[in-house]
Length: 250
Image (cartoon, rainbow, N blue to C red):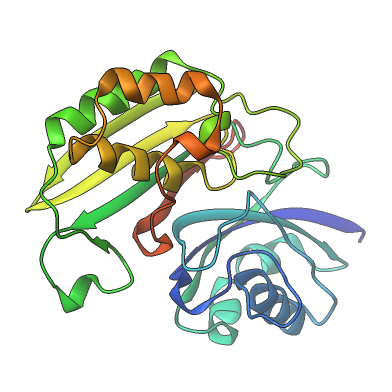
């Protein structure tokens, strides 16, 4: 029996962790997942995630790939209960999927979607899962601005500086601001995202909602390709990665 590649689907509350990716002197989701899987399979396991989430960001759907040697496929596929028993409660393994040896969790993802949550009144049940905003926001204006995102591909103005990406172009296919039970949910889907992109977009949309800038100003910010012109990066607590799509996974 030789080495075999798999995808693992997980979900996690990022509030307790310093993001997904392993870092020195900080506890991350990847570190704990690798440790749990290495213990369960009794061999070193190194996962590679579908992307990077920053400290405090959550994921209801996240994929990573890993390789296992000399273990029957059925045992790997059915390892969820055992892996979960070794993970903290904030991280949950959902399923393991057998894939081809060249399948890549990051590079083969064809779409990703995020949601960002905003609430307006103190609520202990939304702590670390939504951003409390005390100002009144014009949701209709925010939604009109969000719709303009579909007309652009270069989102340099929303990207963290000094990243190693080869391009700042993204194809956004959905961007909508909705009211849900007195709160706001911003949903955005694209083929790829830049570092800090969603939080910077939300920060700029909030400026529209406060009438600090108008729709033309919003478009001018995108055209400028200058991060300093866009809004603040909003807190990580309200951001959730909710969907990652692959052509070979249902």
